[in-house]
Image 1 (spheres, rainbow, N blue to C red):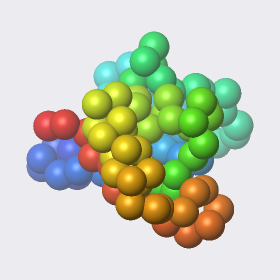
Image 2 (cartoon, rainbow, N blue to C red):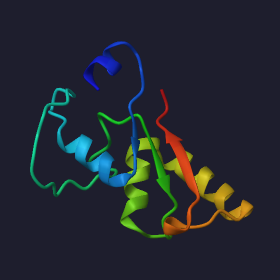
Image 3 (tube, helix red, strand yellow):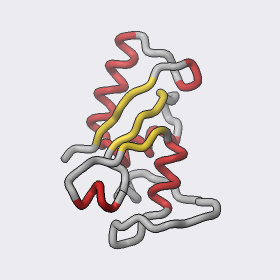
Length: 106
């Protein structure tokens, strides 16, 4: 991940659990280091993503804490626009199969 960022690449996590794990291994300097154990990290407006530049995720119900995590990665405007599109076009929710790729603004 560190070399990907150093060369201008994007790190894309697959799922919210992976996102939390990667962000938990990120130090204050933004570098990712090996870690083990559990995390209690909650990503959101108070703790935006630093290591992950995007994620592939299923859709979550309105008000779910997972939406805060999506906003921590891709921003509130991007998530709101994608959410509206998903509703308007009949995407299936969470465990039912449809996913989205959400990218942070560069």
